Length: 411
Image 1 (tube, rainbow, N blue to C red):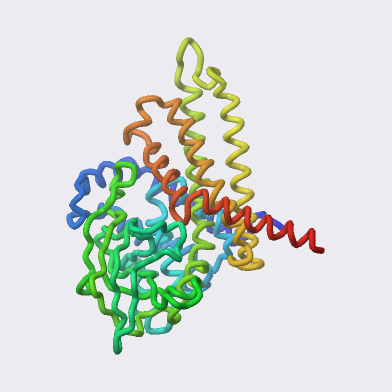
Image 2: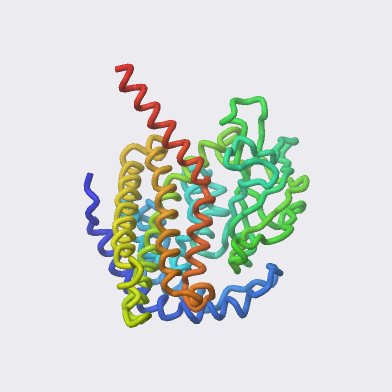
């Protein structure tokens, strides 16, 4: 296997890096202040996007730095998972960058679902405006009343009735639900409780203005509402959508979910590594410039040794994630499930460790928005739950390892 950057990756990375240094990084502090001024309220219907964000998105589109995640030469950059991974890492250094390049969750995953599984009318109605950045989307899977780490527990029902599907249930932690441009949700629910457990569920497209879609509240993640995106709780009360709104067909929900989550986890993990690199830079800057007890902080309390350990941990996580990306490109997401679970276990934990150690050096300054550290900590801790908690990924790794071991013994 070869993890060296392709010519396409090098070209996009150079252009992406220049754009971020020139346009995004100088604006980040101002964005933080503007966003707080516009959205320092839990009343999500009042949330707004700072106007400069739309300007940056248009500029990124004009420069061809748009939909870089999509492996299509016309609709996206045509990059493989491995080729895109370094770009995701670079974007991960900023909490704002993924949206500017139309590469942010949950839109990337939803666009991949529509690209790979949507029919022509679904793509025309929803994929095209998402690719253009005209609207945003939501993915509704997790439920409050069941252990959603086992997705077969989902209780939301999707029942056929004449020419419609009727949806009833409650979802929460539906990311992006509070965004003023959110228009469409992909909802996963139970269509046939008597089928084999991985063929009981389906995905349907539900416009958010459909009668019966009741957004009850936004949920603060570690005290932050993540405006203007939001993580919402929504009730579907006898919501009717046409039969043609189902994706693929009844019972295909888990097949679609696996196709969606594989590359998406690469994106999450590489962004986490980029965020860890930024936190490590802050660690070094603080450790070398701040003096305590007559010495730079880096020379005190074993901080030099911590720096070495953090450097090694980030590099290990990167190599593990690139290996998983290479596996997805070569054997597919379903066969690379162990490698994908491994990176989802490792990368967010590495980010959390780097941020935590950096916060120790910053002291009280790390607790407020004078630094990006609180936001990075929230990202790290949330990623250890999103797309499955650590325990689930450990179980998947162990299950596959035992299966391989038994295969060797039987041979």
